[in-house]
Length: 189
Length: 189
DNA sequence: GGATACATTTGCATTATGCAACTATTTAGC
DNA sequence: GCTAAATAGTTGCATAATGCAAATGTATCC
Image (cartoon, rainbow over all chains, first blue to last red; front, side, top):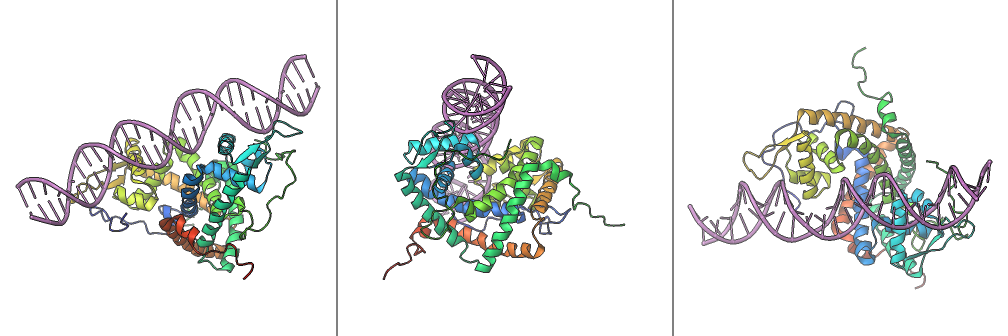
């Protein structure tokens, strides 16, 4: 795993794409905000997965589902979908996995038996506690070089970005592409 | 696709996990920084994918690869790996897909013929321009409710988080779990 | 009671991912 | 120059994730 000196010696001397990402400039993947967020989040999630995967046999969806159940004991599968950004099939399979591993149990709801009412078992809580402890430490490590003031600002920004992203997702790409945008900002009158 | 009123009527009245995420408190998935970043980024990436997938037949890795090639014409596959966070197999297949679709071509390097020297074709540039235009609009839409000042702060913070996440990934979970942490902050001497 | 709506599950096809083994090429040692 | 080791990239195959149609069991409405 050596990390440097991998420049292609035959690379032609083109522009290397260092221009700013305004309209007309070529998009820079590494500078694209969603990609930057993605990279940070998946690195951390990968490390956490490398822990709970081999140790408890949990898939990513199963871990996410477990965390949601832990927060809201007695949730239905449908609620897990919304809270975890998973589809109903993924949740069904994740719950099945958790039950098979002995980490969760479901009892039919008393007033409406279509709902599942899922809860963590004793061993489920133990596993969850251990994983979430590492998760918290990872988060702490991640933000260790960010000041509390900055963190507060970040919190507010992420709340806005979360809202905006939800809106974008709901409206789809058409509304964004067809909206009057910053492209071709009238170079001459 | 109705969006509300999905509360499980049989949900028991447990604690709903609203306590802060300090040591000892149960982890809140929705508040966990990596998950917040993940959600924002995947929502936007999903919308972009819903555009270029059906329209150009590109997979996610193929789009990422295309963007990297566009930025650095003549890259080798190995460089794409590093720049795009993809493994060598994914890159190999992505390039294959791009070539088959007529979006890219590779010519063997002149001084070292092990390297590929990949470039976009004419149609590849056209497709890239169209996709990246939408990508830029998505980013603009995403940050539309964030002030320029905040954006600047965000930039700095993300740079730090990116460094920190790279460090975490490189060291693995053991170093984070075994590090002296904020857990059990000595209740008694 | 029968139609309808809802929550969830299952089966199956498609796609992605991980990894070993392979080819081709270059470099280093002798 | 010849062999061994290193490097870049590809391919095949097993396994896992994903998407979606259809089915099941339940509740509600008329």
